[in-house]
Length: 246
Image 1 (cartoon, rainbow, N blue to C red):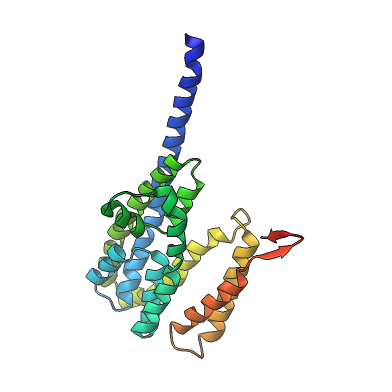
Image 2: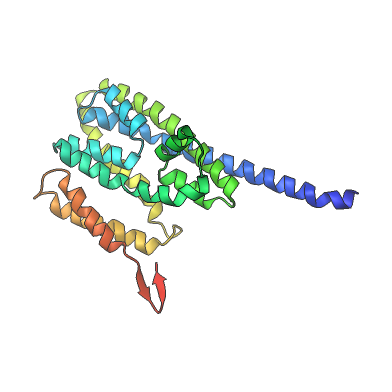
């Protein structure tokens, strides 16, 4: 009897270990990413927004790259249309993520569907897709999303309120927050251990070159739109010998 029960015990133990690992990774990633909300809150106030406006953006928009793009354009003196356009372009990738995740999550009820759509971001998608099976993928998505959402909004408020108490020198230093935060988010995707590192570097270089070249000659925010075109072209897969080159 003990011999026959052993495989079941092993399976239960393995499943429990996989679930614990998924929870650990999801919470760990969520806490790390959530800390970027401090930078966003400070940058938003530095760009002229009120703390409540920064918090509303984090609660309702909840896509870091788009939020940083919006306040970055406003802080550089760009108009509202350019700021919103930049944010929408960067956020459009979440639609593609949603199409990929819909069959995996299959949320039931309008509340779950709304929450799932709101939490479709880079990190939740990566965690869900990387999970070994569908059940763990769902767990990774929801735990990562909840952890980031709570942390991001809490630290946004901290950053926004703290930025209001800073002096002029510290306020001037806030100009570096947006590019520094973008670089921190981008760097892991450029390492050799990342998926398709050559494509990632080609995309980053193409967008950076276009954005830097256009900055002196176009209104603030327009260079982001132009950089998106370069990113699309640079990121197109190239085929050699019948296989896609990374």
